[in-house]
Image 1 (cartoon, rainbow, N blue to C red):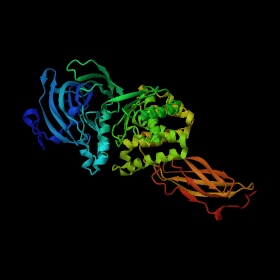
Image 2 (image 1 turned 30 degrees about the vertical axis):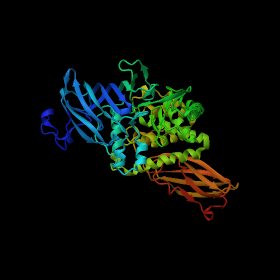
Image 3 (image 1 turned 180 degrees about the vertical axis):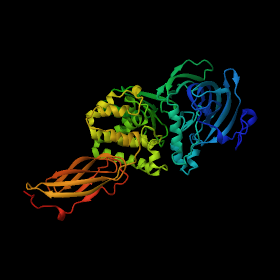
Image 4 (image 1 turned 45 degrees about the vertical axis):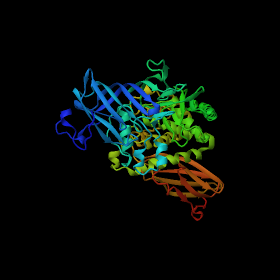
Length: 581
């Protein structure tokens, strides 16, 4: 049954007297288990799903109304609890969590109220088409070509890709509204959903109706599904996709006429004619693997790359799976992509600042190895721009916002990816490569039950007290530091050396250890200085020539303001008088 409402739901069907659409608790339930039979007709762009899902009541009160959502290009057909049909109404719900810009929402009246933390099994059925659709991007004035290269999900005759919530809700979800036009609301809604369903599992039985000579390759979350003998018509193929935990990855299903290139550490699925590109990407991955294993240990799983047949398509990564156009790839970029993938394959975590921060950190390390420290800092600088703006745009008072935006709690992708990368780099600068490698080697994701687990592993590798650092950067979000050289007093010694006494002030609330560089006629000297939030610190630097300027921060520590980092030393103010006896 299908019904569209502007404000009031059909009360006779649901027996929820005088309830308004806006009063629905769309996040009361999470789906903890999916066991779905998925039929795909590539030529018709058609998807039909029947299967069982398990709902868990995550609210504090018993719930008799369940809200389930799928892409607006799909239609609900049935919902059953046991052997009884469940009454529901279907309505459109505007949300950019789907590429169409809206969801087909089923508001179902359950047979009985489900207590908090209890579960209920439902059998669901829905079908429809999944064409290329970039409506959500076009309505915020994104150029059509750019929109289509970003939202390239579709069922097609030769290629099918369904990236899940955030792109295409091809399986049932339950989440609140989200709009690309409303700041970070989409990313917050998506990350909230991922956190609620991080422990969920999914199993697929896929039937592909297709009369081609060669069966399509079916890849689910980076793992190739096993084909099995068809039980019905000859013009179809069947595949079993093993149960997988979702973690923080939206379930991604890919069907294509792929060939596969197997390497010890990576498997590359590629479109026919892209053989050379696939081989080159495999070569790049093999070259960077020793670097990754040195830092993060032996891989837990094989990394996988799947070729996108659209040359302008934006790459997408989900865990150790990368979807990217291989043709005409810039193989400088390929090195970074391979580093990211292989890091995911080597280390995993239930915490996003570790799960996503470390692969980005690895990319910076790789650039440093290939092109030097400045290249890595420049790369991190690009990422700093994004989260620096995010830091400025928060509407909550900083005191209220510290916990929600912290690395351990944030749902902001720019923070748990880009800011986390910088945090890992700062830790590495403070304790050194060897100590950080030992901490990473000791990390066991199954033992990560408390936010302090990883910081304690790091602390165990150094005699320094780093609690202040983790409090400012990991447990809380105290914003960014703002360093300035308050003064630099220079004095010439009797041995023709110069002693520069430097006072650095941090007017920001977050502390950090920052490099301080003195430039003199013969070169530069750098020392590191710990400057706590809202504090000052002093260091003395000895140089062999007349000092010219002092620079605090080389770009390795993210700051809110870098325009005040340089202090010029006037030669007329250098004390050249002999020291008192």
